[in-house]
Length: 472
Ligand SMILES: Nc1ncnc2c1ncn2[C@@H]1O[C@H](COP(=O)(O)OP(=O)(O)OP(=O)(O)O)[C@@H](O)[C@H]1O
Image 1 (tube, rainbow, N blue to C red):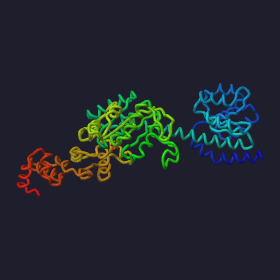
Image 2 (tube, protein in one colour):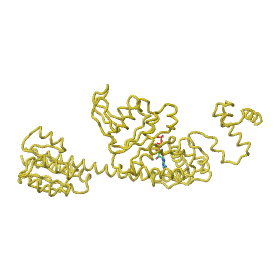
Image 3 (cartoon, rainbow, N blue to C red):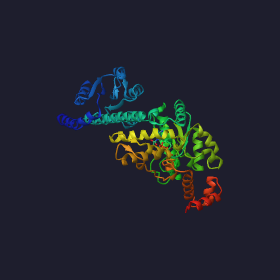
């Protein structure tokens, strides 16, 4: 019997050893608290088959407590030690070393005690019998994998944090973006709600993440939700969660985004698109600082920071009656306005260089240069899609450029803007004027009155020019 168990162990061990080796680079500490010395030594023998496991044994609760500062990964705990019981020791371990996982080993099966202990944080409850060693092995393997995954998540998190070190990633040196940097610093050092405004693609989400990943909340979740992208009938349950059976289709209980954010940051993007009914619900949640899942009555305290963004002028929306004034003031907090790219031309070339370098790094090629004419073409364009559009344009230009230099013909704007080519060639004033008139006529479907209105000139001027210049 014993031999077949040994074989099973060694087999499982062989299968899993390589995986464990990959998963963990340092020793995995296992403490066995067991007053039956013989049983304790058998466990130690089996667990030490894995050279990555550092196993220590303790025959009393007192001795185990004295060694807890070594922060074991796992404690296997005999439920009835001579000087204490499993329940008391579990609570002690959880308070002194919260990351330590505790596997309770009991001489007898007692379901209600097992349930109690699991509720209080025990990882598993095993009954001593011939199979216990196999089951401990598997349980420890699970714990080891979980610890490795947690380590991996922490490494990824710190990489994300590095990525959002805003002084390195948010490019730009215009007075406008420098003002934004100063506001981000303010937002980082306190918990005030932040409202970010700016046209699409100006970097609102980048700013929200920079605030989160540079604040004290950086280890907690950053949860983003685009209000405009969620159908209005689902938004309440997305934000606040729901209980099982709260409505047709609610088959399981689900946490809302506020609850998911915990002590982190919730980013409500496109807040200006929220409908009136939902606005009043959100206002109540923000005022009371608590949420209740749909169909439930458990109150969940709100601990997250709120960052909102919109491309709309919210005050204007308040005036038009589309956005609640009280909600507007509750959300305003620290306002950060991101000017469009066309209003910070200094940043266009800085961002262009950044995107060229980024592309080269990602693709393992040398960064290309921008010819002077290509520079001019970029600066003359209005970038309705802002930084997102610039990034796409530069990536395409880098691909299209044959040599080391990006030429104007490699730069293609998705939205054709004839005015952007205006300064590329030297023209007479009359020629410039014709191009402008043609552009505005096109824009208004040849409606002379509308074009004249936008250009703030008389319609007869346009008719005269059409006649003189034979413009169709
Ligand atoms: N200052 C910046 N430096 C470098 N890259 C930036 C900067 N601002 C924005 N970007 C890049 O531009 C793109 C658009 O940014 P982001 O998604 O944050 O814009 P947005 O304003 O939230 O857009 P939308 O309103 O459409 O949601 C992203 O690829 C982002 O990495």
